[in-house]
Length: 292
Ligand SMILES: [Fe+2]
Ligand SMILES: [Fe+2]
Image (cartoon, rainbow, N blue to C red):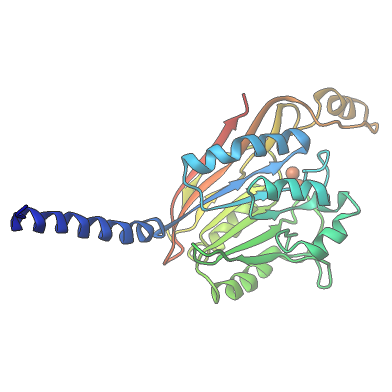
């Protein structure tokens, strides 16, 4: 059979174009890092929601990396070896924490042995564990993660602002992509910290109040911000706990057992899209996904 030179050339052209697309496609993906942050995981319902909902969220939003706050993972108070393992097995890459971190004794062992678990960075020098890390993978640039805790209406730790300045400067020597979990009660403290870090980090997202705020935005320097990510667990509750004992506590000022609630389970958090060369945030979106 005689080949038509024009058709052969055009087939070669199509194959060459396919090869170009194949090589270009991964680079297009790597122009941004899609990072999902999951708000405080509360008890078994929160861990269950994570297991069930995370795979779908990762697929839908093409998530590259997942960070989750796990300070309430074990029965609503603290985190254990098993609950941390469950969270990591569900697809979380780095676990951040906060003031409830110390509620389970075995966390001391966990902090010494699990490099993917962070405690707030501004605990006094000599405290076990680490307050920041740089996560490395084959397909992405390094991602710095910094965990801080506010001091307003919380324990008087070291100054989180001064700690953040020093730690961000150190992390930026390794990567421009930096995510900060600011675990704090006061909105002013969270906003002020994020404004101070604007242009230095990719995102500052708050945790601790368990109430998702609607103020997601990108500051002028390129830092994405959300005052609170909300929480992952039962929302027919008071911050994840059964309603009645909490009311009793407020009415009588007597100790009550605060069980983890069970109704209306949501996974809450924020999705941040980050330019991988500059570290600037390109978009931030609140996530509130129902289990049912
Ligand atoms: Fe919490
Ligand atoms: Fe907290």
